[in-house]
Image 1 (tube, rainbow, N blue to C red):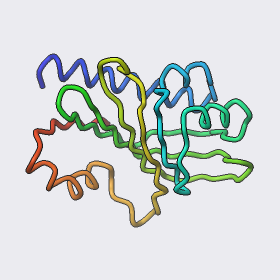
Image 2: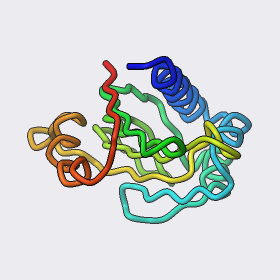
Image 3: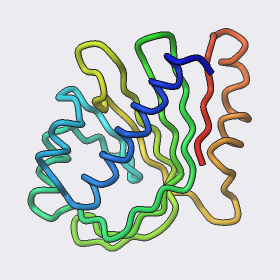
Image 4: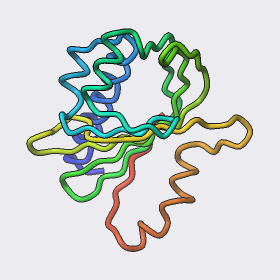
Length: 158
């Protein structure tokens, strides 16, 4: 891994850690810094959310995380400007008064340039125990065709 890739890797890891801490604390000010104004996020129910909606849910207690434990993280860089982070995370909390707990696969998109270090979009999917592959295994199985036609660089974190 060259120095630029190592620098990008460290930046993404730091942003992920900041995002997880802000989500756990419902730190609306920090989330406002980390999330791009243009955010579109699809949650486990399939509903689309914007940055304003996400911040309001944290501000009002509509979204509350009691536990957030990252278990796996893989990064794909698409050229020099875009990064995709795939994470497997244990989450426990409540959403609009409904308690939840389980392992979720989360995919986030971000990049460099004007919105460097900010989350542009993403999705979250509930994983079912016993049928769940590690993030790295899912990436290997699902991105083979993309690897054939793209110059992706891969990073895997513990």
